[in-house]
Length: 143
Image 1 (cartoon, rainbow, N blue to C red):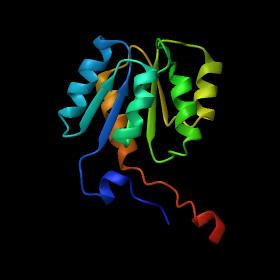
Image 2 (image 1 turned 90 degrees about the vertical axis):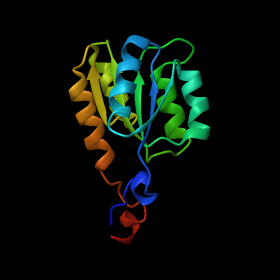
Image 3 (image 1 turned 180 degrees about the vertical axis):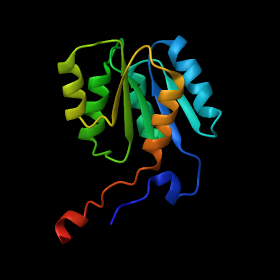
Image 4 (image 1 turned 45 degrees about the horizontal axis):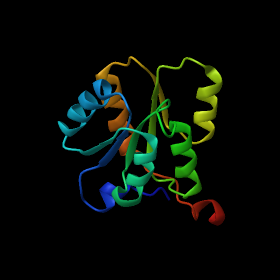
């Protein structure tokens, strides 16, 4: 049986963590998502993003691939090692390389968007991902 996202189970607004060093992108994304009633925090690099994961517990992360101090890939690897599988991830990047996209998908990215992206596309994608239930981890054993 699927599991509702934490924000639904806890009857609170969804929490979104934006991890992107480009303020010209992060600021309007934050503004647009806050306009939907979401709780949004922005961290300007991967290292600060990983540190924020320990206290913030987001439901969705908008994650840049290329950042100083720690790349989006290293953030994703940390996320997966820490068994945080109930965080949806949208990776945004200006990189067109297909092998990067393949690696991001292998690490469990839910959506991969190329910069520049249309704001309404990112917002719609975030809304859709936040509504998706998660598979029941015990369900596979019961089948």
